[in-house]
Image 1: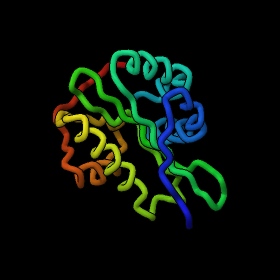
Image 2: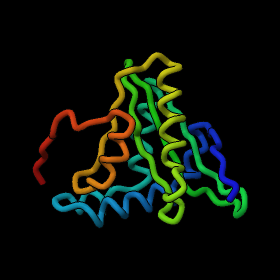
Image 3: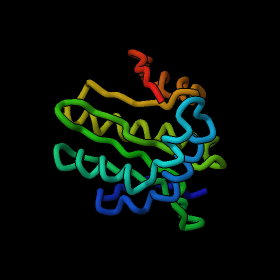
Image 4: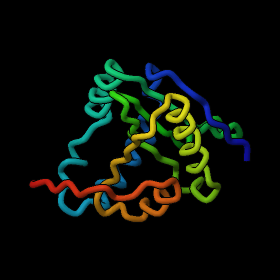
Length: 151
């Protein structure tokens, strides 16, 4: 298996659209209270908010490329705005998850934050996606507070 991380410019974000849509579908399946949010959440709507954020700060887009197939199989989108780092979105196709590629993406993002002297870093995890929590906890992330929303 020959997989590498390719850094792309934010203008090439369309490359992650199929992967982002897979992630959104997982969120839709797992969501208990907000299925309509994920049903109506499109890539274009999400990218609107990303482009706005990119105008105020800086973005990093790392994409996993399987050189054997030529397919993109995962990504990590990170941002820095007002001294706050955020893992905006991270996803790896299911069949590639056992190879610790998520670790490579996280380490790459955390190194980028560190090189920009960012220590305040957040990740927003969808409720009911609690299987993701141990992964983030390995990097020192913990639940800081709960934000409750009404439908």
